[in-house]
Length: 449
Ligand code: S3P
View (cartoon, rainbow, N blue to C red):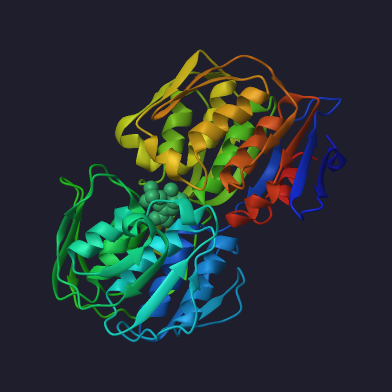
């Protein structure tokens, strides 16, 4: 397949249409690629760097729009952050408790992680007033999941619909410690409360129903916080007030971005693709387990540990997939990969069932509804469930016009589906990919050559 069958057209409203045409001869994905830095780790490195004393050096930062939102918010709060690049970003911290009162609204853009984690930090900085907002998608996403536990700690936060929607106004307070039993397994909720616990005198504990990603715990410890975990009960405790000290952070490639290539390699006949330098933290590797259940051929090579996070190169080869059931405690460990797993299921024999994933309805878009609609437009058999999807594989996909609904992971999942659809697929509003994967189209053209 030549790169010319993957093209981008800029529309009148400046959105991008990504056009993928089925090649006349068989396509197979070959070679080795790298994916951009992990989004979750990038946000946390910028935030902890900003709160620490001294300088933090970040290697491999994701240059997507979401971490850029975090960087600009924390610059407005007083941190000095050098020009963003993947080689080395330097953050001169302001020290815990020393945030400035910004002169304008803090804008988290499309990023739920920026807004929810930042709320814990702002609410615990006494004597300052802050206002925070985001884009249309973020302003419709539920904030009560972090506002309520913060209020339980004494936080003062106001917003629309009973303080549950951004824009939000916050008057920072000295907070009281709490033990919060979260009804959802969410790293954003857990991290928000732990960050609020940094300046709060005493023990702040979060217990979650299943383990969500633990990057905050690892990085808070590395920066000097007194933090303990109890894996038996999925609880984390932080003792405040803490002092954080600038560190060197090396950000591994994002397994959530690698997931697009893992599925592409698994469904495009003849593929043999190496994805180098991918973070394989066990709280994120649900995708590898799900693909293995589906019979995909994925090997971990060169496993190592880099700056406190496990890393490996992932090799994927084409194989015939079979259906499986994805439900329960694995869901938080692959929550962001469900749109692309739905694409894998379209090419698997039998009916794949995804359950216990109602959280997908409140992501950057309603990912259950949008994936079902868009894949069905291409001829797939996807039925929405309240908390997931039922996908019957084996029907060939036919190219047509589809839409990302401005959701980065939907844009990229549809692009991978288009590689195996006949005819021409046009993905509208494909520029959304830049939220987490700025060079996605270039890499797609590279692996399809
Ligand atoms: C993230 C946590 C997850 C995930 C999001 C990033 C994080 O959200 O979906 O993309 O960095 O903490 P929830 O914690 O709301 O599940």
